[in-house]
Length: 306
Image (cartoon, rainbow, N blue to C red; front, side, top):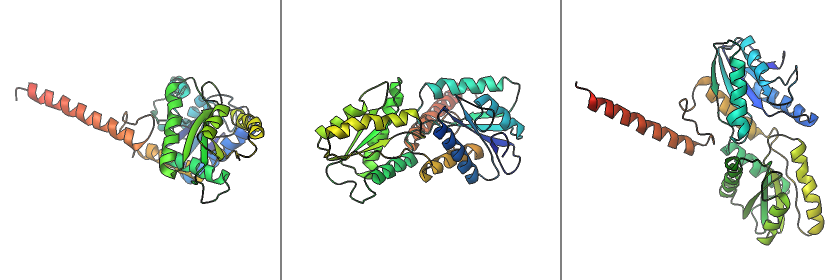
C-alpha cells in the first residue's frame, strides 16, 4: 500500500470512497480498517479512501488528493462512492464541489458519482442484528414490551431526517419488532430522552438503543451520556446501547455491491439512480424515463413527413 492506495495491479478504473472525516483517533482507525476490508473484497481494483474534512498526507487524503491518487494509479474512469447515509448538504453540495475542483486540474478521466448509501436492505440487516445483540442475542427480541430506539446524528435537512424514519419503518417491517421509534442526538427532535419517554409511554419494558451511525466518533459517544440519567430515572427498564454499524459484514456487503455496480457499469443507467438507492425508487425513475423517451419518440414520429 502506498499513499493510501490499495490495489493489486494497475487498472484503468478506480474507486474513490469519500467519507466525512474526523479528528477522533478511533474513527480514523476505523476508516483505515474499512478501507482495507473493502480492498480485500475487490482484488485487482484500485481503491482510494478520501475524506471531506480533517485529511492528512498519508492514509486519509482530501478528496482532491484522492482523485489525483486515482489518476496516478492509471485510472481513466473514477467511480466516486459517498460513505454517507443520507443525501444531506455534504452529499448534495460539498462532495460534487470537491470533485469539480479536482477535475479542474486538467484530467480528462471520466467520473461517475454514485448516490449515498440510503436505507439499503443491507443496512436494515445491520441495525436489526445490532438490536438483537444489545438485547442479549436471544431469539425473543420481538417479545411484547420490547422497543428499539433508532438514533441518528441529526441534521437541519428535513429530507435526511425523514430517511431515518424510513429506515425505522423498514426495520419494523423486516424484523417484526413490537415498537420502533426514532430520536436524534442534535439539531432536531425528538431528542434521545424524548424518544425514550415515548417508548415508555407506549408500554416498553426494555429499550434497545441502536445508533444509526456508520462509524464511531464524538456524536456517537453523546448517546451514552444522554442515557445515563434516563437509566437512573427508570432503573427497572433495561436500556442497552447497541454497537454502531462499524465493520459489520452486511455493511461491507453493501459497499462491495455498490462498488462493483459502479466499476463494472452494471447499475441503473446514468441519471436514473434515486438518492435513496432502493430498488423501488430506482424503478420509478426508470419508468418515468421510459415514458418520457417514448413520448419524445412518438412526437418525433408524428411530426416526420416520412
